[in-house]
Image (cartoon, rainbow, N blue to C red; front, side, top):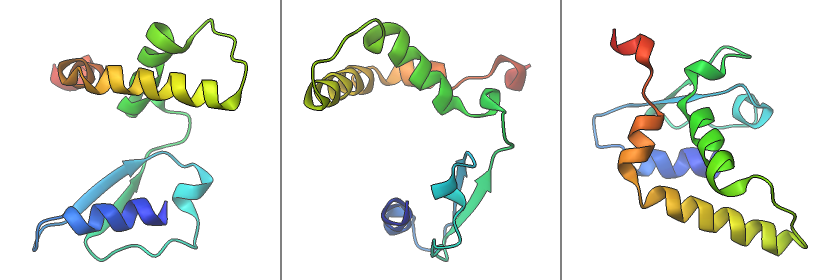
Length: 106
């Protein structure tokens, strides 16, 4: 998580500030993180997947490419997940639609 935050901080424009929404996983909330000055963390409420569009991405990937499979090894799991991810990122319009919330646009 620290490396992720550090990478985000590097691409924030000078004078700008990044707001990073995240769930309350232990590695997101640990006191061991050193928060860059140009980032603010916004933890989502617990047990509120409807507020986290990433949950829709994982659900879409499971429904389309990752369900009903038996894997023989860790490497096979990793290869299959990477393949699914690459299929998804080739469809940016799909990613955008997965993050929409009907109640937020009414």
